[in-house]
Length: 71
Image (cartoon, rainbow, N blue to C red):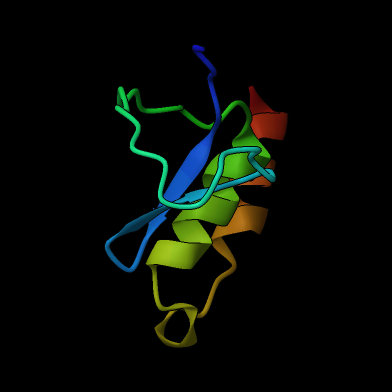
């Protein structure tokens, strides 16, 4: 049975984003394919997660949205 599930890699572990229906200790092979953020807001959220915003005086999300409006 082939099944595609989305996962996130956190703390050295691949974690499913939705509930999966496999019995415990089932051995599986995983093909890894990066999923790119689909929009400016997802990119900004990912950026916020990776950057310590306590040191930044301006909000990167606001800057990105302002830049988007100029285009």
